Length: 540
Image 1 (cartoon, rainbow, N blue to C red):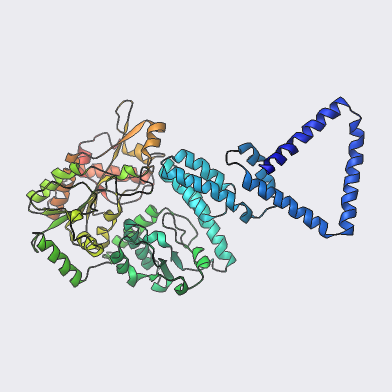
Image 2 (image 1 turned 45 degrees about the vertical axis):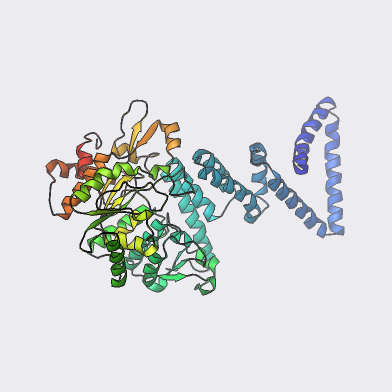
């Protein structure tokens, strides 16, 4: 507060003196005299004691630094005046405490699903920051919170450029080494998406020695069994002492999960690089990298047999994300949730044809009604990391929502029926998958947005439905039970080599493909046949 009083006094003195001069104009004559005397005294002090100039300089920097740290975060007038001046004298590290204060506030606001307020805080943070993480998290707020994809990519690029400058300073700018931090192991789906990275490295001609995943000992890993399956394809390091170079140097070579920097220096969104990698992998007729060993397969079937599922049976793995699935950014990601009761007709269709449905998840999920050929595995005592992977890898196909488990089956070549998929602009990657997106509907008139409209900003990537409702007057519609059942029927027909696609179905899919490409949306999964048949205006 003392510093603020000094700032206000410095602001009031010129005004006061100007008023006095207007009343007594003769004061103007004495201004040059007193100014000259002040300069003369300062010069004499400097000649007598040269260190005086550095002491004065240090005091000035200390004053500005303390003023910055004591400024209230809502004092925008003072910050607009003080910070540009301070930037002339202070180093970037001097601004870190202030930038980080804004950053922490923005994080809390984003976690509370207040993306517009969070962006204001992040924007203030970025005025004074050169930390890559500040730019990347601000980009997440723009993309996931506000749906501003292009601006978000600009911030991701800025984050990567800061890292590149650090790599240049360390003589590592031309290095082909790829460093993956623990974010890659922070979620079940993140570990599964390691698949695209490993395949990308193989296609680029990289070797095992060219990449390392650092997972500090004690870090909570969502599925250790899946992590172990990736060990033959890259170095997994748990102790910092075992890293090939200092951690600071490795951070400069980060292959960032959401928007990595490629060898040519460009920054791309993970969905684009993933889609291009899988398309090239499929074009070259390469198969899945991961495969279960015979012991794991035998143990898995033993557990299924204990629960009444014959070894020669076929089954579908099911996972439907519910509201209790995540605590961090919970409200922001609620759009990913769905209602398990909407899946009951699809479950009945599978069991009617002789298949089994094994429901994955955690014990907090809503219990499935007891029924023939249904195993509510998520409520059982058999839940384990390895059993989760066994179910994803051994199913005839997977059915579920856009959550972590949905990315695992394709690592083993198992097709998926993706339902209630979100966000619209992240079309699932694999061509042998079928999917149904959630839909936008205008609240005022009940009109459903077309595919083209749903792919544009701010709709394509935004997760904050409360923000879109407030600013765009839209709500999000879950898939109907009939749509989910029909998509499952289409996959069952494919398993039986039944082709029920007519000329209109083929034309609709070609048009959908054109719309996705025109909007620079990447992925290869196909919209469900019946879903398109029921919605003639969706592709307009």
